[in-house]
Length: 156
Image (cartoon, rainbow, N blue to C red; front, side, top):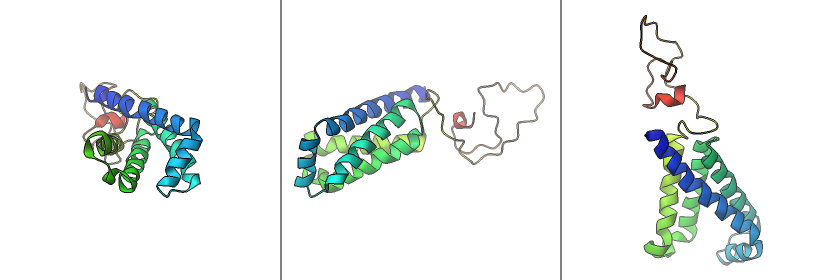
C-alpha cells in the first residue's frame, strides 16, 4: 500500500509541476512581467520553469524522485518567502504549503516500487545475504542485513 500511496503522491505533484513549468515557458512575456514585478531577474524565469519541468518529470517517472522532491520543496520555499506570506491562506499560500510538504515527503520517502529507477539503498545495512538455511526469504525481500531505514524496498 505504501508504494501505491507514493505513486499517487508522485502523480499529484509531478503532473502539475510539469504543467506549471510548461505554462511559464509558453507565456514567457507574462511570466517575465510577473517575475519583474516581484523584483526577480529575467534569468530566473527560465531557471524556475526548467526546474519545475525537470523536478515534475523526475517525480512523476520516479527517476531520482528524491532529488526532484528537494527541488520542489526549495522552489516552493522560495515562492512562499518571496510572495506567499503576503497572500491570504485560502486561495493563496495554502497550495504553496501543500507542494512544499509534498516535495519534502517525496524527498524523504523516495519513489517507491512503482518507478523507473528505484532510490538507492539507505546505506545503513550490510550487503551480506542471510545465511539461514530454509529461510522463507524470497526475491521481494531485502537481501541486506540489519537494515535501519524501515523501508527494505529501497534495498532490492
